[in-house]
Image (cartoon, rainbow, N blue to C red; front, side, top):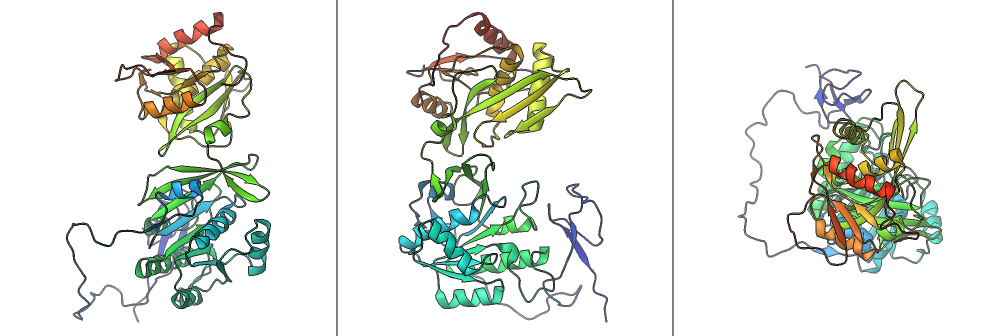
Length: 466
């Protein structure tokens, strides 16, 4: 009998190899190589034979008369992240840290979809049905039209789906589901891949939407093979800090809507409440300006959002000063510090630098470079900027301040919240924005010279909130 060769795969990047190693050659991560069990025991190294299969149905590129149907839950922030709403036949993966509120938001959304007329099945593999009922009672959803089940066997789950014919299925979580055709423990790479494939195939075959909950690793990545992210149509990530009541639902991948769209929720005793104006909420605790505090006008998906950047620069006694960042890219902070030192002559060699984004939100866009530079410069030089000013712009290695996208939307959001001044890169459109004064800066050196004026002048300084 031919010897069955073993294969190993990386849980981070999906690299497949024929031998185990402590470090993945593809992504460089440690302890991510695990043995992959074959999904079929067919003959090795032979062709599929001469037996014919079924001819697939081909079509042209003309629009189909049967368009995708969207269902709205009525939770505006949840529907915004999905796109236009829940799409039939969609496979959705929702990830997040333990205790962040994944089961809570899904139970609330399931209740709204059920009230909208969809037939919803909620299958819990982590909790007993009685535990889910207790959560529903706490959220005031005991009478919601949801069919609840507690099961981990994939065959039993799919059999139930075939009989019930639901419109929406929620699996909590994919790591607890096991298939009896795969010879490995639940939660392993092979089991997660097989379960995700079968559930996604069920969604495409029947037209039901499937939402799967996925655990994350300690560094925030979705646990299991990366191929699961490629199987599904939409990947949502639920994020937030334990010390903050805010929760951010972010679309990491979406075939039916914009990527990086966010929905903002606030954790309360009765569940997650949607936040209709996140900018106002993120700035609600911002009092009188202090050195190192600036407001950034950003864009998350299609939504303009204003957040506060806080910086602290202190003398350091360490041989290698600290660079601590919360909510932003640490490598980009190092770049901004290098540009400030090289192009503007501001040294941070003997100083610790701390950067924080208030509210627990994470910002990824390069447009925040100018706001970060302003916050650090303000903290280093003990300069208080006008409280009614927002900053945005991308900084290049040459020190130039570059224009960013959706400038008008950023300015409109700032003006709505009472800000009267914006500092950014030169605009292509010279038409002034009514109600807001725009100060343009070509490069970082000019920006620093402009900011030095605030040190000796009180022009534009305010005492209260914008």
